[in-house]
Image (cartoon, rainbow, N blue to C red; front, side):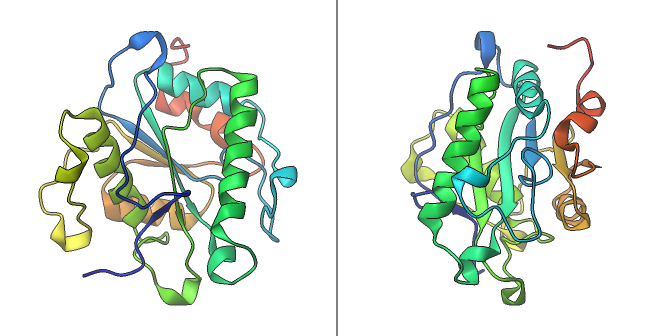
Length: 216
C-alpha cells in the first residue's frame, strides 16, 4: 500500500465532498481543471505563502476560475505544501490560507468556487506519491469529484492509486495548469493535457487555450 497520500483541509482524504452547483445549473461536462496554487491563482514566494495576510491573487484569477465553471468544468486545486512536513507551520495554518484564497476569489466573482483543494504536506526527500511530480493528488481529485457527482454512498468509496487503480475514466477534456515542470510531469504521468503558465501572470495567461473566448 502506498504511503504519504494526498490531504484535504480539516477532514480525512475520503470524507464526503459536497459540490456547489455549477453556475446557471449547467451540467458537469466530466472535465476537471487541475490547478496548481502558487503562480496560478495567487502570487507565490520562494519563502512560501506563510499566512492568510500574505495571500495576493494574480490578476483575473477569479474571473478565470468562474469562466471554467461556467463552461461545465470542475476545479481541483493540487498544491505541494512542504512547509508542513518541514515543521514550519501546521495544517490548520494552511487551511486558513486556503480559506482566504477562496474568500478573495468570491469577492471578485461569485462563481469562482474551488470545488476541491488537495495538498501534499510532505518534504521532497520523502518521495511521497502525493507530491508532484507524482500524480497522487490528481488521482485523488478525480475519484473524489466523480464520487461526489454520483449517487453512490460515501461508504462505497474505495480510493486507489498508481497501479492499483486500473479502470480509470478518460481525462481527454480535462487540463492541468501549473507554473513548474513538476506540474507538467504529474500531468504526463496521470495522462491529462497540461499547460505551463508564467508565474507572474498565472491562469489568465492560458485560459483561452482551455476554453473558447466566447464562453463567459
